[in-house]
Length: 161
Image (cartoon, rainbow, N blue to C red):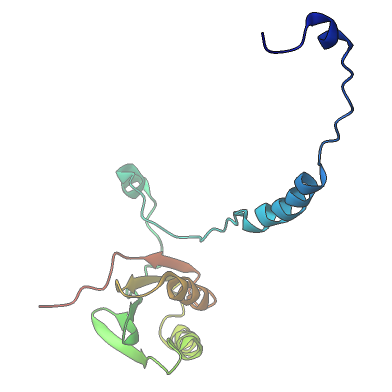
């Protein structure tokens, strides 16, 4: 029969076995910083929008304002640049510059229009084309807010045809 007899098995001394912890520690030293670097940290930000209410009763019960703004102003953001529009007429066109949209020219044009024609107006409607990237939309909203703090978004620019 193979194996030890019972008497030898009881008296066998086991030597202390050292576990090799150095490789495990080295793995942790490399693995923990890598996991921390690749972790996804969430940054939340918000954009204030003025959207129409879905409650019809508020429009019926709302008090009539003393001074009504007769003209509205809209800003079309297209792949060709900016167009400032009021009552179906284009007031200004700001074409693209070499690096993209000309936000400086937009800010000065909006400020000039606010002082000359739209002194009582506080709202502007952005008509955004499908090809405009999100960062440009947010930057456009930021440029509009000093002159027109009530920035609203419309669906998109409608082209005829």
